[in-house]
Length: 269
Ligand SMILES: Cc1cc2nc3c(=O)[nH]c(=O)nc-3n(C[C@H](O)[C@H](O)[C@H](O)COP(=O)(O)O)c2cc1C
Image (cartoon, helix red, strand yellow):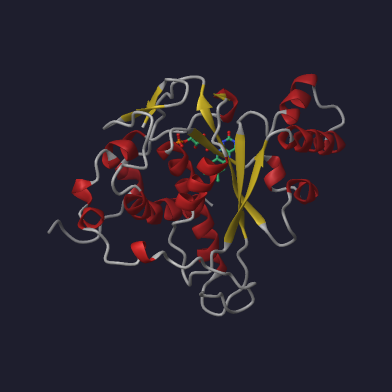
């Protein structure tokens, strides 16, 4: 599992360079290494599918976007702040989030950015479910009921936790993997593309001035919860991305040493 997310992260780093090309999508005071979140806290900053999959309709690329890629996208040294953002990017835990979250237009922009990921065969083997408003509490109450079915002796504290599963953040987006057998594209690659969407979604939320957190939790793996959450048969949860404003500044956490995770092949050029 760890390998799949690592692979997804690797492919996504390049994608994000393109997505974030000018820094103009960044708002609310994004500077070289930090951006200021909503709460004022500095935070680090018509093709169709084939095979067994349902067909996917792609939006036509607008004429304005169909020309050559601008030099500033291909010359990454001109992307202001991107390296600093990547060097300091952090999640804020969902339970430390507050209002405001993104509104309709902002969510649509975030999802548009997030869906710009590597996708072998252009299958778009993922989709989003956006939970917001009062529905979050209703669904969370259903999740609490299911949790109590499994463990009738849940503590009062844990019952409260269950009732808050989707209400910690103003907006929660489920990234759903719709990977399915395909004549040319292995399901493994389709699943990794959904992982790429998750990280891209975390970063797209940051780009619009919101904090974000990628969680799965028990209901991502419990089929009983799927109808409650709007997940269809055969689908899998890649992640629940919580989006909001930070109540606290982020703290750094240990990162793996390169020596532990890199195998060098060949010499420095
Ligand atoms: C696929 C996936 C699922 C995760 N699920 C959970 C979870 O259920 N609960 C949790 O506390 N953290 C979970 N995490 C970890 C959180 O995203 C954590 O906040 C994150 O690793 C912080 O790292 P960052 O600051 O570099 O983004 C998950 C991470 C991934 C990649």
